[in-house]
Image (tube, rainbow, N blue to C red; front, top):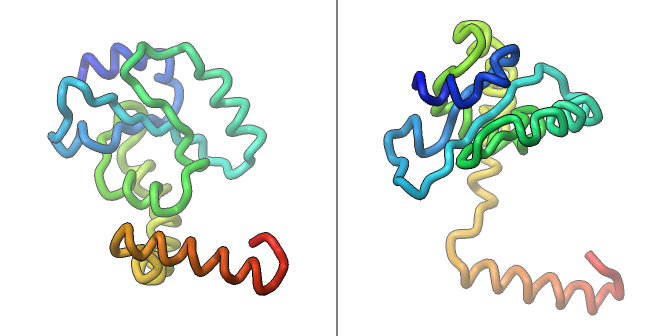
Length: 139
């Protein structure tokens, strides 16, 4: 963890967590390290500006992203398995509470709408094309 903190020292003034294979202990030598910067704002322009400011400030091998820019199911993945690099762990956990509640409300619907096989994906594409033809529109 100290090596990660050292590599990410340019982000030390921000809330930063590592998630994915590294905290799960499943990282391989070829794995990158997934990093989420928590900006505490949903303002897309502000988050884009933050992301631009972060470009080039970390060594290769780190995939740095803005937490608030993730779709909800990726936020849920981050929140289920993360290690705090910079920031107060309790404050970060409390910040995640809002997103945990959102995810809890939609998780079952999200899972119910997942394809179970590649065959099902192909059937969906075929059905969509058929509907486009019948309706004469692009979906």
